[in-house]
Image (cartoon, rainbow, N blue to C red):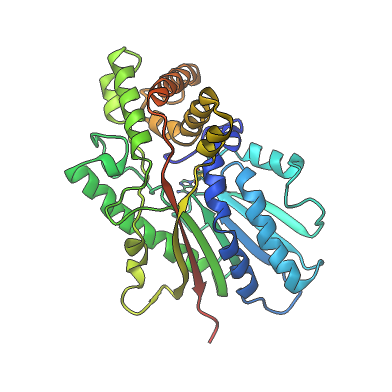
Length: 353
Ligand SMILES: C[S@@+](CC[C@H](N)C(=O)[O-])C[C@H]1O[C@@H](n2cnc3c(N)ncnc32)[C@H](O)[C@@H]1O
């Protein structure tokens, strides 16, 4: 299934960029937790995280959300936290984080109950009018499926013509579907915070140089015979970076969509932490290793779905190592930061009449 991260906790170890993006949305989450409508005490408060992955980057946002709710409701009201992701997600690593991570949000709060859901967020994942507070970071840019088989480049902003248009159309449909499903799951007066990689009006995200390197590495691997031409031709990332105006389009008519209204919409530059540390310590080898590991853990599993036998773990492991090595070589010749952005949106579900 397209979109899943590298397992065995690899994503947890290498998703610094996504952690930094999520951190820029914590104030919005804090405000959402302060303004969500809470009915009379007694029933649990429900938080849902959509696209949780392996849980490391969930701990701080969940802590912030829980602290905001505890400040309003006291220490005893039960809080349910649902971590949702694709069925093939590495949920084992998520549970390990909840058990052992020193920063785990369940620590010191006996009335918080974490749960996990293995189902696509392009389906209903929780009952109607059930969720008080939703959080989704760096997940809803993954589309429900790859809308075209051969795209000419792995990354949408670098594609041309029909392939680019097919992703665009799918991006519009999937965004409306994601929002309408989440709207149905939110309680009246609930809030949904969505964090995405930001895109300029022309759809460019700042990841293009890295994606061009990755695309070139895959061509190199096909030239060396490590990948077949057919495998390489079908490698594509089903992500779509939506410009702000496209994210707001469903609300264009009267400011509302499926009983949701927009409370907050902000796009900020994301400082590149890996580059920042390189400027401090001058360790170029460490810097390229971190970029390559980030790329491998976040994107390679989706690209390698195009392997003739994607279940052949031995070949996949060898190819992943080769890819990472070649990507590092390229990055060494092009030392520069990733100029990405973070898009944060907060939606409020209408209150009960
Ligand atoms: C880049 S990770 C983000 C993880 C975490 N939220 C963070 O901020 O680091 C994207 C996650 O979205 C999940 N994802 C992609 N498509 C999905 C879908 N259709 N339904 C549920 N989860 C999905 C992936 O499996 C992956 O775990």
